[in-house]
Image 1: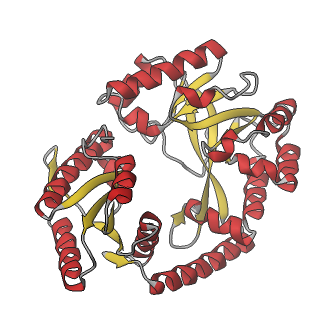
Image 2: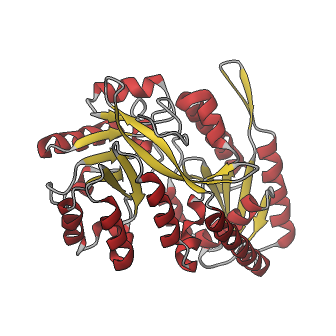
Image 3: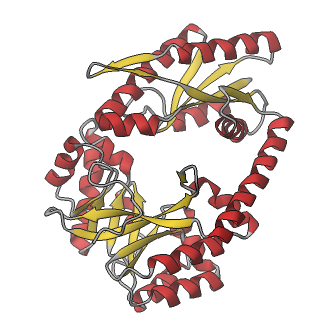
Length: 387
């Protein structure tokens, strides 16, 4: 259960340690604006920073008798096994915040400063969930660290109300718009444009992706989907809309999606989540195909995830970006990609390598014989539909 890139324990190991530790005190660390670093210095630079930070954080953890983990792409965690002592914990938290501020790394003669938000759980139950809640508040309020508490709960509720107001205003003003990122073939020809949600206001252009859960809960989600669908349908060339299979079990929304997108050169990109394995999904996919809509399975991480699908239903498979990033570092990642590619070739399903952020990554996926390619290196999302 070691993370392939950073060579420190992974999320699986974190969950196991939480179960086995008597008095876990959990700190989640999210690197601030890491995406900008990754885009500026490419995957090589981003991976270098992640590995160097992991090495430094593990050293810090060892000195303070803590366990260190990589949780997600740019998120890490520390666990301290000790009964709650306010003075000790305060000292440790401020020490960690100071340690992160001191981190500076040099890549290709460029000095890169590291900063982070920290979410902390000192409770005895639901450690990860509570630490994530605290981390969300730290991000939204741009605070160096936040400890989970009833105050955090109230602040989250207040933030949710603010988000609802923003979403309602965006719907009223029509500022939720489609952005597009192209998928290309080996000859640079555009295969299709993937639609991405953006909220365009006077100050900035924001992704409302983080708000979609709240939109579901508060009844905004269907309105958002219908708004962007009506805008993107004007384009005659091939285009894709991101959906969850959960959307197909809302009969009103499913009927709308079929009616507006049938025979319009459209692809449904289906998120790889628990709904993708629903027992009664096949009949929904059959209806989609009958209406001349293509289907892409997004973010596929293993060959086994393809086994439950009728091959006649699937037109494209988009391989998880983390696998693409690890191709030059991990024989396991390369082996997994080869297995997926072999299965897709056998089933006549086209394969897409996503999250290509460097020339080296593009060379790797071309050598593996992926059919199509997508990523910031090839074209960032814009409001212009690429013809």
